Length: 418
View (cartoon, rainbow, N blue to C red):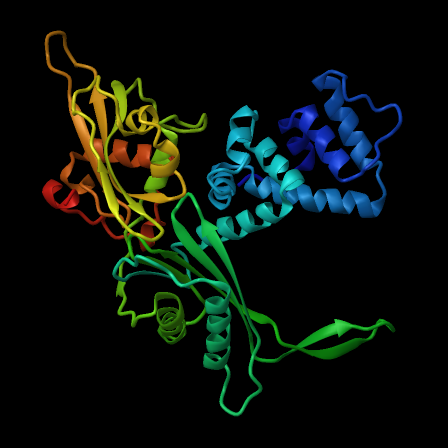
């Protein structure tokens, strides 16, 4: 991520959005400030006006703009889309904006609570694959028990589990977030930690020791359709087991016997948006002679009772409508591809232009399961690299750091679609 420079951020956002931001924050600019001036004149004028504000207002603006800068990128925008429900106005607004910085600023100005939740999602995503992270596999769950009383019971159980014997019960707070785009549930867990002594300056400019009990932070992300659990917690296996035992008792309502896995997950719900590439992608479809990309098959699973699966498989011809076209033409796109169902398996087909006149065009099928199973290893090395780059560009795959990654798990084509 580039270093934060609020002047550069001001240049990335059009005047209309800055005007809305300053108005929503009730910040008065100089009387001669004209929002209708040209962009070349407005940018330095807005920078000067911001610099001329009082210390408190300037510090507040800098603090908010620093947060906007942190989400003004592809992972940040994905987190904003992830936390917003499928029918949120945010999804209609985003295509109208000119940059990720404008998108992030618009959300902060309109939906500050949603922005804060997106920060939590982005923070967890950045820690995946690093120290304190463990990816586990359990049987897929048709339902998670996550009502208010279930979360409160989990808070009490974790507080007791992390309280030493004969000690005062520790405080515990759990914030639950729906990851709508990923079809997952994120639990942010804070547990009161051991007392520590902190050296501080007092009112007489002398140092004093103060006893504090900082919270121990943990995060758990559960993907019920695939049975994948990401747990991010300080400490080792003992801490993870204590958390998983209570998750099984209160959220899954069954004993969990997790198996360790490390392959990258596939966020197949992002295929609902089609196959447009962001401007900053490194993939050149023309250079690879890709003529068409279609979602040729998908299995969707209901995420609410009664639970069921639907397989959507249009005709296989290159010119036939794909899954996205079919659900739109049959007017079931809101129900099947919206909040009620998650894509758990998919086949994406690439059609290549013929290399020479008279030769048949080549077809490549990409078979994916949400848990990370695919047919990538069965491909030629060049095709596998192209497919991985496309999956990353679409946001479907978030590869782990090289030192944390195992080869992508594979199945035969018949098994992958069973």
